[in-house]
Length: 384
Ligand code: FAD
Image 1 (cartoon, rainbow, N blue to C red):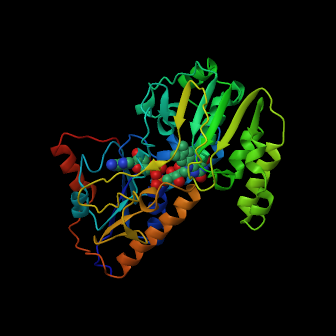
Image 2 (image 1 turned 90 degrees about the horizontal axis):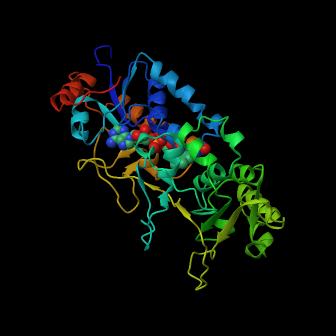
Image 3 (image 1 turned 60 degrees about the vertical axis):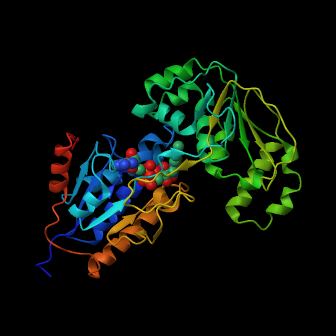
C-alpha cells in the first residue's frame, strides 16, 4: 500500500554478484532503495582484479554495473569491511533485507610440504599483482628462471600461463599495470608446465581459453600424445563442449614442439595416485587450485566443508531477511554469466519476500544513516 515504507536493501560486496543482485531488485521493485558496501575503495570485485587484462571484452560488464550504480535508488559505499567495521546483525537492524555477496577471499591449499617456500605463489596473489590489487602490488615474483610450473587445470591457470608467455607488444595494449609490464619485460620464463591431478577429460578450462593459448604468437602448446590414446571413444558420447575441447587437445597433442612452450601434464583420470613420480625442475611455482569463501560473521551460518553459506534459492537457512548470492552462495566456480543467473535467482527471492509480507517492514529502518553513525563511532570513514 502507499503507506508501506520503501524497502531498504543492503548488499555486501560489489563484484558481479552484488551488482547483478542490486540490478534485478531495482528493476523489478520501483520503490526499493539499495545500498552496496565494499571493503575496497573501488567496486567490481574480480572483474577488476581477477579477469585478465587481455580480456577487455569480459570487463565490459563494468558498464552495466556503472549504470546500476548511477540509479538514484542505489548508493555505493567503499572502504567498509563488513564483519569488522559493521556487523551483520547491525546491518540487519538498519535494513529490511541484507544480501551477502562477498565472494571467495581465500585460496584452497594443497597441504603439502614446500607450499610456503620462496618462489611459490598463489594464483590469487599473482593475478592480483598483474591487475593492480593494492595488497599484491609489491609481490615481486621471481621471473629470473626459464621454467615455471602452474598447478591446476582451470581457466585461471591458463590466464597466468598466457600472461607469462605473451609477447610484450600484446600486453602493452592492455590495461596491465606498468610495474608488472616492466617486470614481465625482464622475465626469463620461456617454458610453463601446467600440472593437474587428473586427465584430459577432467580439465576445468574452457575451449576459448585453450584456443587462445594454442594460438598465442611465439608459443607452442605441447601435450603428451600418450595422455590421449583411446580418448576418441571415451569422448564420443560426452556433452558437446567437452567433446570439442577434448578434440582440440587431441589435435594439438599431435603437433610438433616449438620455441616457447606450455606443456600439459595430467595424472590418472580418477585422481588416484599411480605411484609414478616425475621430477620437474622449475624456478617458479604458481598454485592455481581454486578459491575459498570464508565465514564473515559469527551470526551467519557457514558450511565450512563446502565453503558456502547454506541457503535455498539465496535465502540463508534459519535467518529470515538474510540472503546470499555469487561465489559465497554456490562455491567459487563458474563464469560471470553463471554468477549473474544465480544473483537474479537470489534477487527474485528477495522480491518475493518483500511482496509476500514475509519481511518485517517496520518503517524505522534507517539504512546508511544508521550504519554511518556506527562507522563514525568506531572512527571509520568511507569513500562515497
Ligand atoms: P567477487 O567478484 O570476488 O566479488 C566480491 C566482492 O566482495 C569483492 O569486491 C570483495 O572485495 C568484496 N568483499 C569481500 N569481503 C568483504 C567484506 N567483508 N565486506 C565488504 N566487501 C567485501 N569469469 C568470466 O566470465 N570471464 C573471465 O575471464 C573470468 N576470469 C576470471 C579470472 C580469475 C583470476 C578469477 C578468480 C575469476 C574469473 N572469472 C571470470 C569468474 C568471475 O570473476 C566470478 O564468476 C565472479 O567474479 C564471482 O562474483 P562474486 O561477486 O561472487 O565475487
